[in-house]
Length: 310
Image (cartoon, rainbow, N blue to C red; front, side, top):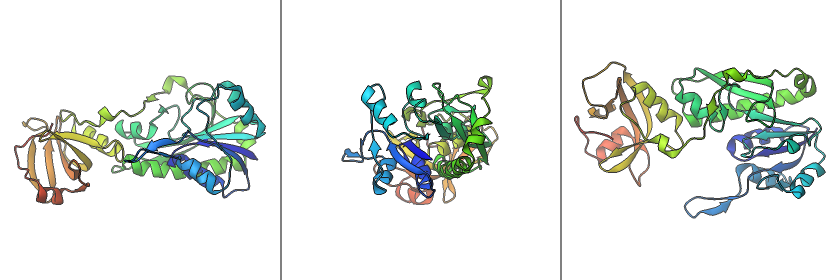
């Protein structure tokens, strides 16, 4: 098939890399415009664009598809199918109708659960035991189209957002290739979603990284794991923000201690009272420093039982 690929971040680049190993022809790649990145805020091409250029594939970067010229360019590729993975644009119906077989999306959740921008983090935050990927026929609505194929995996107790991202990126790429092997048959058998069971995976906001110690230890642990490696859970410490990269729940019992209070601090970790239970901090990052294990942090900073976070 002649395929147009539309995607932007690393998650999408994993899928494009897999497609490049097949006999399908990638006739064009669409990606978000170059954005400032790094400390120097230098304009940087997306991972998908960089991979496409390495393989000498034409790259288009329209801001949207409102201009007739952009829609005409898309049509000029005469694609059989457009594959969309974390592209970052809602596609109008005119675009969805352009390829012969329409547009499909690789989405990192078990639709209709977690439609939207941040399904991986939202699944961890909610305490879901399973997640997966869906290959979906795209409609004008947000992740509402019929599901062509799905694959499930367990969310492990220690999975971080980054780890689950990488697992789902590989699962999505492999599931897509399986789908393409028998695409038109599977497409004809696609299953509509039950809108009554849908929930929305809103974009992650930086303020969500602030830890509220009155929450349960279990919920705080989910927050720390979900926001690793962005935006990183954080708490106020000595009038500065301390980032927390890793923790574990060690006690689920209530304690008559104010949430946020250090119960003990030693080589094993820093134990913090929460609204329900105790959580042990295992890896921390002071402002302007690198993330380090708790033992190294304690060697450089004085913390003791009774001190308070938040």
